Amino acid sequence: MASSSPLTGVILIDCARANATRGLAIAAHQCGYGDDIAKFQAALRSACEAMNVSVDDFADLVADEPPQLPRSAGIEVAPDTPDDL
Image (cartoon, rainbow, N blue to C red; front, side, top):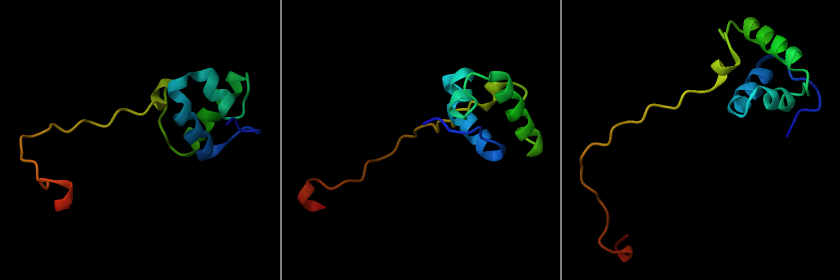
């Protein structure tokens, strides 16, 4: 749900990050800036600077996927039947 008023500070950064994969225009709208992408970017840049967060581009907000741990060979421990639970 889009915010009814423009977000600021850490809330703006969180909202922008949550919507970053959907694109700049959608993130601006969801964060309460409507179609004013320039104002959204300026507010986001200001919020990041205030928190000493280094963001060079909007794409920097996209969270990296957590690394997948390699599956190692092992054994499965389970009861023989559901009644043995």
